[in-house]
Length: 263
Image (cartoon, rainbow, N blue to C red):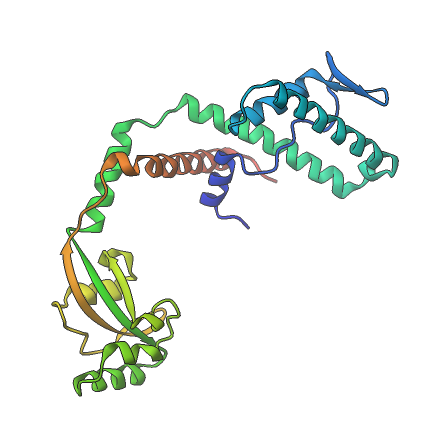
């Protein structure tokens, strides 16, 4: 089952499958295939969708859309001849796709009517900066399953063995082949026990006792630290906008779900 934040992202991006139409609507016909009309509304919707994706408005686009719709209609007619449109599963998929189009239209309209201000985005930006802290750390670690294993690694470090060599025994596949290096990051980017232990180390120091987390037992070494320099607001504004939009949709869905009567 999709998490709500993932669902919000999909809906906002329009990533759920959307077909311009599944049958000709009443009204002006754009073209007719084997006596079956394709409505002008279907054509207009398809052209608008292509233009929204960056296609230039040109005779080539219009011809391509016409040919695509004709081909779709031909294939749809063949499917109906085989009775596939009577399948309960197919009918269910059609209803889901129609529903997705309506949902996307509703959410697009809602977001447009409730724009997120720069002030809101800047407040979120400042909150993120605060949570990141003023310092970032370059760390490395060895992750093992048992506490005794971590203690044995610490004992080897005390005897002068190299951290990078000991890291080869780590359970962390992302860092074991890099001498345990984790790169630069804020302590808040790690699970709490790890971040707290890292923040207490001085440059060149390693933890003298194993650090337990949900992943196992860590031996952590601090290679360096430096003042945190977050990217400027304008650089991350698009990401903040997307994140705020997803949260806005999540809140809307939660509110509507709370009011809905479900038997």
